[in-house]
Every structure is written in C-alpha cells, then in structure tokens.
Length: 483
Image (cartoon, rainbow, N blue to C red):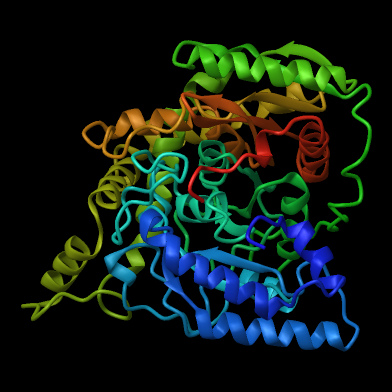
C-alpha cells in the first residue's frame, strides 16, 4: 500500500479495497522501521492518526466521499497543531504545544485527512539543506550522505521514501520546490495569499506560502484543493474563488506559450541539468507547446534583495521569542536583560542567529534606506519583469536548482554557497507568483527538477502542464533503492 499515490488511495478507499485504519497502521509501521535512517519526522502522532482514520472510515460507511477522506499525510512542523508539539525544529520551541490548529491543519482535518505527525525542517524554515534543525539533519533517501533540500526537507524525504503519499510544506524562497527537485517529487508554491498563513509560524511574512509536496501533479491538485481558500483570520489571505484543481489536468497543451529565460542558463548551472531542462522543453513541444525565448533582466539582483528582505522580516517576527511568555527560557536569569540575551542565544541556532543579525542591521537607523528600501525597489522591478514576460507567454520554464543534492556538511563553512542554490526559486516569492517543480531526470543518480512559473492564481495551469508531462514521462514514478 505504501507505493500508492494519493489519487490511488482515494480510489482504493472508495472501492473498499482497504480501510483508512489499515492503511494508517501500515504506514506508521513503515515509518517506525525506516525513518531512523532519514530523520524526517520530529513528532509522530499515532493515537491521533488512528483516531482520525477510524473517524474517516465511519464517515465513508455513512456514504460520505472525498479525495482526502481517510488519506494519510503529515505536516511540516511549523503548522500549529492543537495539543501537539510544534517546534519549528528549534530548541526555542522544543517544549511548545500549540493551543489551536493552523487553518491549513483544520481544513485538511475537516476534509478527512489523517495526520501521521510533524516533519523535520530547517530551524524556523531558514535553510536550503535541512541541516539547521535542532533535531539533526534530514537525509536524502536517494543517497543518505546527501541533503534532501530545505527547508521542507523532512516532508520531502518522507514522501520520497514512500513513508506517506503527500505532505504539507512552506515556501519562502523555494523551500517546497527545491526539496521536491532534490528528492524526485512534485512540489507546488501557490500564489501568495491563496493558502492561509494563520497558525503557520512566520519566517518572512511577505514571502511565506504553504503548499503541497507529493509524487505527482495529480496528487498536488488533490492536496491543494483541501488547503486553499480565503481565511478572514489571515490579513494576507486573498478572497479569490478556488477552482477545481483536478478538473483541467487533462487539458491540451496545444498552442501553450512557454517562455524560457536566457538568465536561467547563465554561469553556475550544472550543464547536465541544463541538458535535462532542454529535454523537458522538447517533450512539451511534442505535446503542442510553443517555445519562446524571453528575458528576466533583473533576476541577477534577486538573491541580494531576498537576503535583505527575508532576514529583515525574520528579525521582526522572531522578536516574540523572548523567553517570557512561551518557548525556551534560560536558567536563573540575573535580570530581564539577561533573560532575553541568554534565552535567545541558547534557543536559536547559528543560522537563525545569523539571519536575525543581518535583518536587524538592515532595518537599523542609517541603513534602512540603503538596504531594505533598495531591496524592496528591486523586488518591484523583478515583479515588473514577470508581468512583461506574461504578456508574451503563458508559462515560464527553467531549472529548479543549479545543482543536484550536495553532501551533508559540504556547504556548512560557506553559508552563501547554500544561498546561491535558491537562485531560480526566490524570484517567484519576491513577486508572489505560483511555481511548481516536477521531476525531470537524474545526475549521478540524484534527482533533478524542472520549474514552471505562471501568472497569479494560475495554479491549475501549472498542474495541467505538469500532469501532461508526467503522462508522457516516467521520472516521477521512480523510487529510491531500499525504500
């Protein structure tokens, strides 16, 4: 049963080939057996999962239907979950049990999804490798010596290893798409505001967006359907109708205009990945798509702009973790200042501290105009580049990452080299656009992804293109040896 996709599970449950309780027990046993190799989970919620599975079986017995009813998933450990540790993979929140459910958690639970637990991640979602977690690095099931990508690496590793069919993630600068590419999954970052951020512990509020990680575009459509929608509790949620994301998966690609930016193939891209991207372009051409060269001239400024804006917002968001109300508190503080200093120094890891310091500096008096304001102006130029491009094309295509997964620890002495792995993904977050990564081949036995970008609220178009591509290729069907 562990090889079944979300869509196949829905059909199996509907046809009474197995029950949600049977499936849940099978996957929990598989996690207990295999996850010690991967470290993809922080918390398992066996009792809650079995309770939800039995409830889903009862709902089906009463005639209720639904693609997610009884389907097992897991949540990245920054979605608040009532009564369950929600740690953000940080010592700061190691003892924190959320007093409420995040909107994403509540919506998926209402749809009947069964939550098996909370997955590992980079601390406070800050990282591209899933190495900054307080609970230890996550390993890539394709090669246990390599990273799975981050920050949603736990969700990606668990799905890639067939521990469960799908999981939630969040994407601030590529943190769904990049691990999807490095573990042979399909990962979707929706339009900013499409999915509620309420109850999702913030890293950078103007960039964070929740989305699905799964093996196929069809499965991502099912999970996104359960997650998306307006939420009055979230001031950044957009009141936009939610279409049936599965309805147009089989639409023709005839005449679809796909733009390929020259800037995506500059120095720094592994030539073997470039070749796989070009192979994907040829495959889509066979399906009727029309390929057009385009330019995104301000892309070169994306990384410096992002690494000013995101840390600035992080320094503000993480100021709430002060050792006073909840989270880690140092032992025997001498006074309030000592409480703040030691609680934060002990609670936050090195990468989080680094970004807080960068952000506080960028926002400080005398530097705000020179750094933060300039970065926001660049952000607008990047958005304008996309708007110009989408006047000419329907979809933009390129590599998801410049390199395949690197060895654990290989970039620890040079954080900037890890930041550069986000070069193709962060522009979508700066502009608020939807983006999807889909499997496109292998380099040295490690997976490679191709990224698709679309205009605002065109997630259905991304899913349609990816699904049609997956009907004519088999990269997404391949699984790592031993799992």
